[in-house]
Image (tube, rainbow, N blue to C red):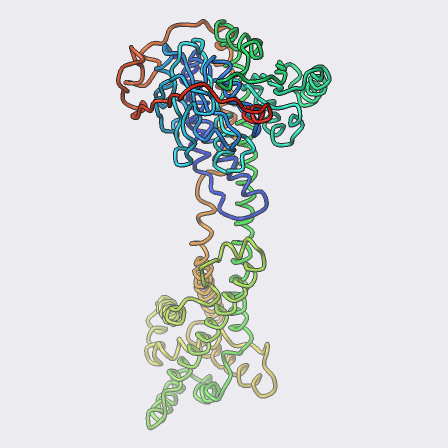
Length: 638
């Protein structure tokens, strides 16, 4: 293995990891198809790209695919010259894919080198009519592939009979698509009356996009209509970028007693396949072309998935932004409530003004201290201390405002998110329409912590001995309440006598603080106190918004769109060097280093090794010649 190939494999693994890591959980437009594309891309890397890139000169895999009743199994039997896969009028007849290879190539196909997700069952060819050949149709065995070694299969080429691409069974259609995606070349079978159907052309369009080598078999063409039907089909192929694909016309013919077509009917197809298998340069061209086209198509798919990933992130980001906006508005409402004087309503503030609002207070600080001590004594004679009462009143009001704002924010966020189908899907099974159950407790703690912060601010400001003495004489509680009143007092939102009360409370509170600390210091204290409260409230509301992270974080987790694009571009750059080697690549024999340890077999008849088919199942023998049937039944069987 060359350094270029090793580098390309590293880039391929990185792209596969990025695809696996992409989260597409939101049910937005295009998400379903992007998820399907991602699964298909990862599976094709495992089934085809990685195995082929690891072993550029491994035998080719030719997959025979087509529509229901297109005669795929009859065609495979004719190519081998013996009924090895079952035909019949009951659809679908091919449930388990059958992979036919030369015994000398057993080491390549008996292991899980390709199609690792399918179990291996070893089949043995026995003489039997076509309607009894192969495995008994069994839906439970759909996840396995029957491996059949036969000398009639040319060396360096395996032929795989796939299920119908338009099967009535979903699993069959998916398996058919998976097998076609793992092919080095396709042998696509259709009929004279079905070649214009939409489903086959969708797959042929994919073949053109992958630049895979395709041979088209136009089967069951009525005698005399060959030229007309072939010309129409070739025109359609040319319009879809498949003009160079060989077209093989199989004229309608009577099957023999074993249900077999005459050998001459498929002579051209067999010659084409044998020619590719026997020419090492042609094999290299076919495998290199398919690999390059598949990697190019993988890059296109990765970018489509990247776009879908970006759209998921945009939708999730918009939801986050909307939720954050609602909770930021809630924090702003709390901020407004602390400015418009609402928290300073009531009789308590009037009594607080009576307590500190006499003209004597500001004559001399010493006489004011004496008078306030007398009034405080009076309050303790059957009345609560006004500082404590006001403190509790403001704390209660601030707490109520925060709880109400958080509850409204939760309700508004829930309503906004669930307006869309994506939001309803995201919130299925969740309940975020109400604030957190512990919000009241956290709001109470916020107020207490803020008040403690005010005490610390005042203590820091009262550094001088005289200022400290004045503060201690009145008490930290009184000074703290005075600062709270200054922070909250404003005439906005108040009317009548409330203006005088709140405004007066602010004036006397501010004058008291200015007498102790000075005018500049009071302005600074009030600004810092308000900023501290606003920061705490915003953190509280942000924590409420963060409850949505449990729903939105899975959308953000994993690789982003740019990561996918970068990984795809890196693989494409690495493949340039690999492609130069594929051109004219020399052929060599299978070496032990080419396969995983234990895969290669010295003798095809030996017991299976590690990773090989653990079960050997004999293809059932027939009980005699096929009974005579009407021509119509024979045609249906094909």
